Length: 180
Image 1 (cartoon, helix red, strand yellow):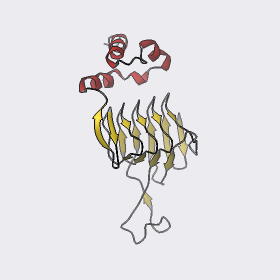
Image 2 (image 1 turned 45 degrees about the vertical axis):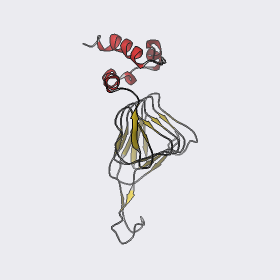
Image 3 (image 1 turned 180 degrees about the vertical axis):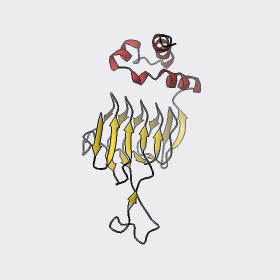
Image 4 (image 1 turned 45 degrees about the horizontal axis):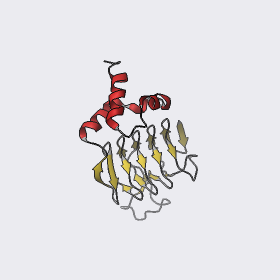
């Protein structure tokens, strides 16, 4: 889905959802905006907890006053959230950030720098504490791009399995060999 809100564009990928309460974007979370026209891009199959905040604006502290009546606000860039990303409750994500596919952002974290694919980050500022899988499994997930398929296809292929390698073996045999 693509949405335009005031001066900002955002896209929510297939199967992604925000937890309630719902607000101006109709999917929960808060988007703090600026006139610089940044965008928020959310990939497919993401889960975003209550009270997530996407900060798209800053005040220029070098001006005499930081108040927007006297000093223009600005954005440093877009927010890009990959596919299959889990963002916990009360997370704040600053602008000019990319959160990689499969990443997990722990509740209450403040994301001030890019998050690698399949990393688990927590804290203020959010720091990598570990990765969800080994580097070999992560590479396989990134090659497979399973999030480009429908929920029905993925369930048939075994995405609900607790074994990532079993699922990857199936999806690679079905989709990657078919396109080789």
